Image (cartoon, rainbow over all chains, first blue to last red; front, side, top):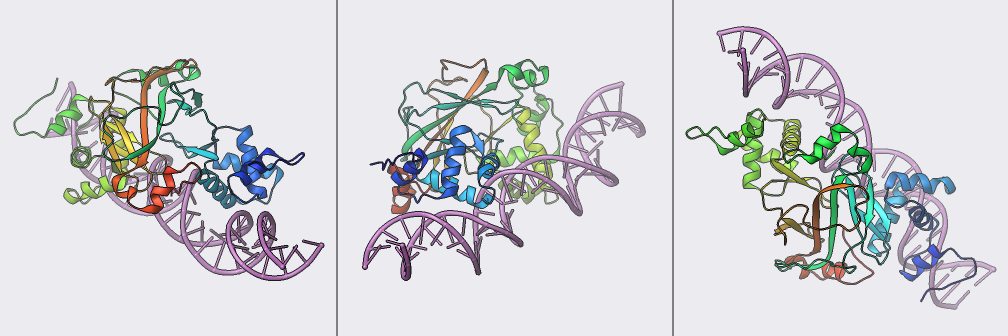
Length: 160
Length: 160
DNA sequence: CGCCTTTCTTGAAGGATTCCAATTAACCAG
DNA sequence: CTGGTTAATTGGAATCCTTCAAGAAAGGCG
């Protein structure tokens, strides 16, 4: 399906193949995401503007929505963070989140296919995905007593 | 540990046992959560004000933070929703979220203990919890063609 | 009972995201 | 290559949720 032209950015083909119009901001957003996984809207805007200074923040939001609807991009929102975006690949991975610094790391899915977890009782829902956040402390935050204490004991949880 | 006095609200004991001061807004927040699982801050505020009209929204946020840190309450934030709260019980359940209407349903955890999923590579993290969101369409939204189409096919997805 | 600390109230600010109308650009057919 | 149609982008403002700050009130211990 993909229309491959000489020296054409792969992002352009991605867009066309998904049935989306190829626009400068959309290409720029995809390129930015390719370089910077787990970026939020502000970071993407900044990256996009390095090469296209005139792009508005609204355009970035529109692009992200369009790309998400088209399935090219996946949006994440671990509690306490603003929306993060990543290019959707076929690996159906999950995420490891640090309670201390909110750092996000990819972890492979054990089964590899979505939905990767069986559900006993689905309440009549048509389930298509299981999204998993593993919460914990990253190596750096484990060294800091404050944050160590926050997540290790049973009662607390300074999620912020 | 709990100091049980005649005709005392169990919420007061919960707070005292957790080492928190027993205040009117905190008790009211716990009572509201007990009646209304998966409520957001606005819903809790409204419920609290039915009996305590003077409670400020800021007090509700403060209470929710204090209760969350103390481990009495758990906060959820499925992508696209504002923060939701539920009383933390010992069942370590997970959640089923409708992409159409954002309705949230509890589903039991298969293993029952946290973290309920083993992680092959933990990147040096100290993991204490696996939070799972099952995404799909609730029975009502499955009946609506727009939303049905949104999540079932591979390319589209009007997640709104 | 009274002090000290924590929590609450009030008012306002902040950040992220969305809405809207007018303009501009991309795609497709001729 | 050119025009017409459709869709995307711009820019500004508005909305929603959450947090900050300062003073007032209330809880808990001695």
